[in-house]
Length: 70
Image 1 (cartoon, one colour):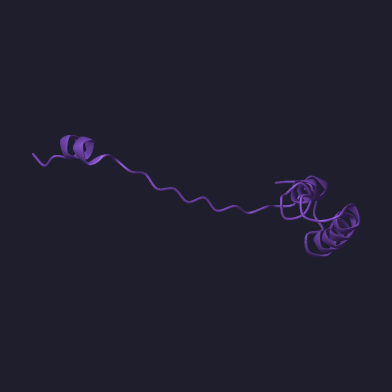
Image 2 (cartoon, rainbow, N blue to C red):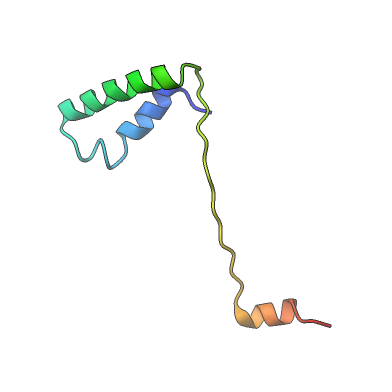
């Protein structure tokens, strides 16, 4: 969960916004984002869904000794 203000700060600080736009562009983007968040996600704090993917690998030599069929 995150407040709308905290989420806007996180997005403003991202490379795609804060590092790419002039200050006026950042302000305009932030105003539009604020309005969109207020309309679509009126509850504060808002739920921010995340997906996590993981891949776990084991070296072949180790795997053959650990997972050896007996």
